[in-house]
Amino acid sequence: MVSESVDTAPAAWQRDVFDVLKAAGVRHICYVPDAGHATAIRLAEADPEIQAVVLTTEEEGIGYLAGAWLGGERGALLMQSSGVGNCINTLALQPCIRFPLLMVVTMRGDWAEFNHWQNPMGQATEPVLKQMGVMTWRADVPADVSPLLRGAATMAFAGEASCALLLGQRLIGEKEWVK
Amino acid sequence: MTAGGTLDRRAVVAALVRERGDLLVVSALGSPSYDLMAAGDHDLNFYLWAAMGSAAMVGLGLARAQPDRPVLVLTGDGEQLMGLGALATIALRRPANLSIVVLDNGHYGETGMQPSHAGMGVELARIAAALDFPGAETIAELQGIEPLRRRLHARAGLHLATVKIEPKNWPRVLPPRDGVHVKNRFRQALGHSPT
Image 1: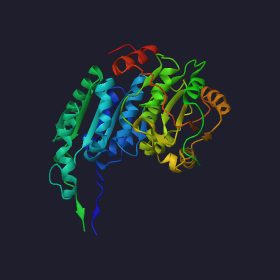
Image 2: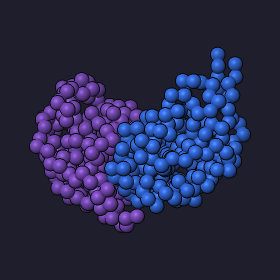
Image 3: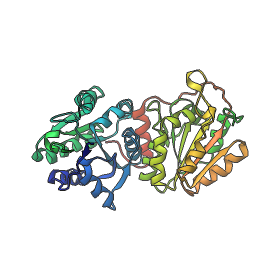
Image 4: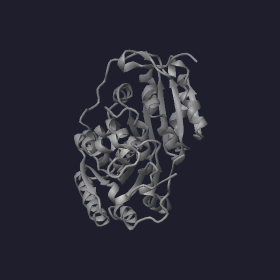
């Protein structure tokens, strides 16, 4: 029996994700639960100025953010790299109507991945995003998270663009597997 | 439950959007968008041409950003079946100003009238009820539309109505396909200038 461990001490960069989104004027945070985003999710759920929206599948967040922008408000979508695969067709919405689509993606199948079933989608994540017209950046060290996300948010909101920051497994840390 | 119903979809949609006031409307790709356009183009209509399964989520985001206005999502049974999980997401948020109207002909009209799950017995209004939507109903008579219209304007609670329409393809009335234009005019009508 193999079970996945739970990280009990969130790293400071996890908080940076939330702080940058909040400072960028984000009012809606859509997410599918994920350990790497646990701090941002917790802070979003606790913040009365933020509408946190838990999704059943990631592509729901794209429609939601398009609607929020139609109504004049900014949002962001937090997900795991596997969720990018779920989003592919719906990503077409962004270039067709042009709205800010800011995504923060925690990577699996990226580095030191124990569960190789994660590898195909993890390896395809950034190429797939680029093929769908999403601008991408990668953070593999904690110091890069805040400035890269700030820059992605600027380009998403100033240019009504699709922007994704990928949080690499070297940043997140090797997942510990307990027998 | 038979596939679809007998109502004229164009009459249903025209009745829903009359005297629309501050109503915001999102229509799903295909026939719901043609129906909405046939009822009259409007700056506060948002027509989807893709992203099947997303219409209700666009409506949710819009309803949450504009809580003081009623938001109507016009979709079809096949489109909503592709976004069944979205109904669970919407159920948790329960925006009082969001109404989802499923124009249910029991078929995939756009692709050759193949029967849909709804046409083979899956009842979306019962799914909404099981998800604890405050309002969930099936409407088979035209007289049911006016109470629905009044209810959505009252922002009286999250609501899903399945409207049983005739499985028939009407002549297409094409809304603008320039999504950037439609989005910008929608936002401008709400007072948001282009970026």
